[in-house]
Length: 141
Image (cartoon, rainbow, N blue to C red; front, side, top):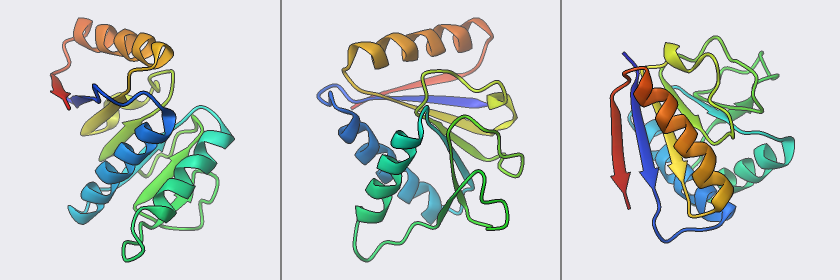
C-alpha cells in the first residue's frame, strides 16, 4: 500500500518556502536513487519549481524534465497534472488535487505551508486518504 507523508511547515507561509522545502526533499530523494513525479497546477508553478531546482545549490544538479518531454529519460518529472506512466516510485504532490493515479506510487509526499488555501486542500487530501485506510505519516517541522 502507498505510504503517505505530510510535511507540515509550521512557520512557512509562502509558495516560495514550499518550493524550497520540496526542492530539498527532491535533492535527498535523488541522492537515494528514487524516481520522482512532481505534480503542480499551472505552467507558472512548474516554471517556478524549475527555477527553484536550478538555483538550489551551484554544485548540485537535479536532472528533470516536463511530462511532455517523453524522449528525455530523467529521474525527476515535473507535471501540470498529466500522468507519467514511467514513474511509480515517489510522487510529490504540490497540486490542489490528489491525482487519480497516486495509488500506483510507493510513496506520496504532501508539503503543507500555513496558507489558508493550502491548508484547506491538504486537509481534504488527508481526510480522503485516511478514510481509505492509507498509512499516513505526519511530520510537523
